[in-house]
Length: 163
Image (cartoon, rainbow, N blue to C red; front, side, top):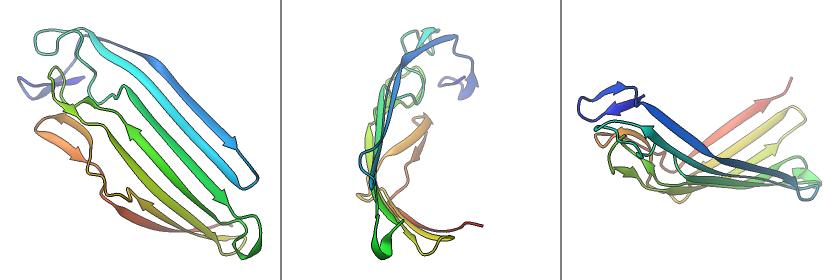
C-alpha cells in the first residue's frame, strides 16, 4: 500500500522487491561492559508500478542504511554494585517521504544516555536522557503534506519493583 499523490488515497503499488542484510552483534567485553550493535542495508523498490508510482521508486519510509550502538557499564563493587550507566547512538539514513516522488526525509542521528540505580534487590530507579543534542529530524511521513517530527530532547524516570 502507498499513498497515491494524485488522489491522496492509499492503493496497492503493484509489485515490490526488498533485499539486503541485517547484522547484529552483542558482546560482554568485560564483566562490567557490554556492547550491542546493529547495522542494516535494505534495497527496497517498486519493480512493477505505473505512472503515479513508477518502477524503480523507493519504498516509502525504508532507509537503505541504518544502525545503532549501545554500550553499558555495570558497577561491580561498592554502593553502586548492580547499577549501570550507558549511551546509545542511532543512525537512520535518508528515505522516501512520499511514494513515486523525489520527496525524501533526510538522514538523522541521535544520542541517548541512561542510568539505573539499584536501590535494593527489589527496587531499581532509572533515568533516560533521550536525544541529548536535541537533533531536529523527521521520523516518518506519508506525503510532503504529512510529516511527523521526531522526539525532541526529553527524559524519563522509571521505578522497577521486582516481586
